[in-house]
Length: 297
Image 1: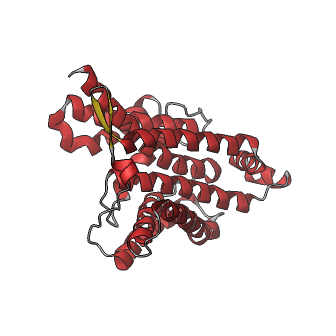
Image 2: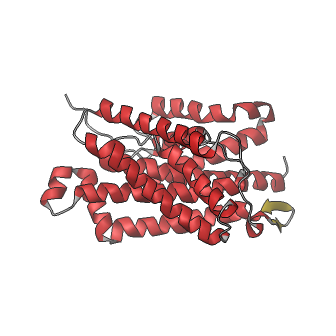
């Protein structure tokens, strides 16, 4: 393999890893505060694509306005899912909440089939993202370069929100202990809702860029990316935002390099994520950046 070809594969891996990282952060933020996995996150990601698709196909809005509206609608959907599927069960056993999360996932998937139909649709393309950029002997789609840049900007904004704002302070307090956070004046219910909204916004950003990179959408498309991003969050250390980012990049680059060096295993690229998960759980069960916790007896 030549150096130019290696760099092309590496760039594609970083671009895919950026998408995984954005979506994985949504899982890890919710887990950090509620200690539950939002299994409907992959379907929220999928719905963002349909919002964007119909904004352009039916309402003929400019792409930038369509994407903004789709992101806002996805945030609203995330808050609605939290209000309907999780809030009423806030003090229920973990298994009950998990079943509700799985139910919300199947509900959204089947709702999309009923409303949008099961036939695949072609996601609209934007010329400024599809043009080819040449760097030396490397040819890349412009979107491949834009995705990591957009991801870095979003992560910087998220870091500022969590570390420097009152909302972020509430999130950090709620992630430690809900009762103590309430005593400190934090509106925990509002904080949880905002967390779901932020996670859904990140899923929408990732979903829209995913749609432009892989321009075919179906109601079941959120399942595999959702599982992979959950695995990325676990690999990095679920509950740790930096860990989710690291896990996303490891998964994305690993998948592309598997195809590059072992093309005969291309059909097993999805299995790579599950093999990686098993290895990490055997070697470091808390994830690469996860903190050790004492077991309750």
